[in-house]
Length: 307
Length: 276
Image 1 (cartoon, helix red, strand yellow):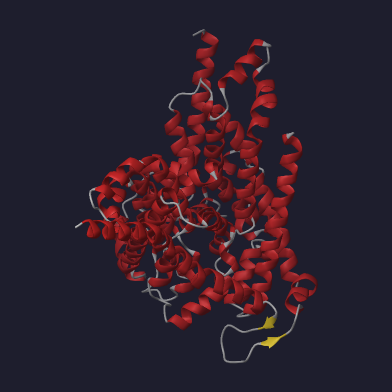
Image 2 (image 1 turned 60 degrees about the vertical axis):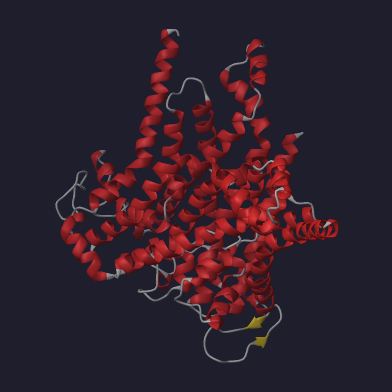
């Protein structure tokens, strides 16, 4: 009797030891198969002249894909310029709107905070295709609401999706509309963590509203600002779906003047339309390194002011 | 409250309300345009109120793309993704939050670190792999790889840390409940609130996914709503009424889910960012 209980307990202890490994194993198995293997494959293929279709054997060409992309290919450079332009106007400048909006929503004078928060957040969870189709219509040259409103003010119709700049304006508008609420909610969470006493002390010293936020809120929020800006950089450097749908797929390569051709778009084009997976992988790694670099700069910038 | 303060309250609330209306307008507009016939959608001045073409648009939409099939594909993929994510991520979250084992901290850090790998890095080889597996135009590539996603594991670990008391687990063990039956008897029932958050976030993410099905489900019959919409959108003989009705029908489930679960969705999506 006693031995069976002991044996049972021993078995239980053993189960307790290996159960956690069983529970976490699905992640590691899936990551090995669908993460590690393709990433390794992607590094290797970036050094090859490798076609997606057909049965031509891949040829090792060293750094040629990278050199080609960085020095010869005219599209890559313009794709990088477009991406950086959209990163600034569509992803980064909006923090200047989102942060004050969060401060406003956090202040005592605003009613129905939850309702506003929800309304601003809604665009973030909407499918990109839906959003682009709507904005494509709003910015229509002949029948769009935007041109109609401009007309009410006596302004001429602008050929939004027909002009280089117009395409960028539409894309920036979409990105701003989609992500301002997201950033606002992140900043709100950060604001709610700032202890109220800090403001009370400043109020006793007679600090005005603006000074209060400049001297207390912003420095207190540096970690959150770093985080929100990092997420914007990571997302902004990967923008693909918006220009892809807006400018009508691979064939138009970003519309007039390739204005909507972003780096991620060009990566997808190279791999899935031009079928050059070696070159596509090289672009992917260049893009990844760029994101890491931009985040390092961002970290440096916020760290300096953090002291 | 002094009159000046009262006035500023009204003024800011009014301005915020105006801004919220601008944010909400595109949603309203989709439903307006979904009720105008194709040749009527493009009108000047543009329509701001509902039309009478809903039925015609409906017939046209279902005649142009296999919309019902696309809807079922979206629903099936999103549902199966959600169920499997909930199961595997709760399992892993349980292990990371309530067990002591070798390399636990390192392994958890590794899981979190994988979230920093952008999707485009492995998309090309992943596609080739799916061709070899014979998974193109099936639901599998959109469900299986993400079944035990790092984000879900992070979320459930955080949640179970507080929601699941050690005493309860010990009591269950003394009662002779095994480690695996513990899942059904103790873990899943107590993880419900966390699973609701992860569930809606996963469902919405899957519903909105575009790049995945664009590459992996190239056949119109096998694909999901966002891709079907983009196909409608790029047709030369574009039927605008059908396009906007399709758009409205794609948005409607999302809006309903968001109205019911906005709190869970917002907290779930920002939890990873703010706590991480």
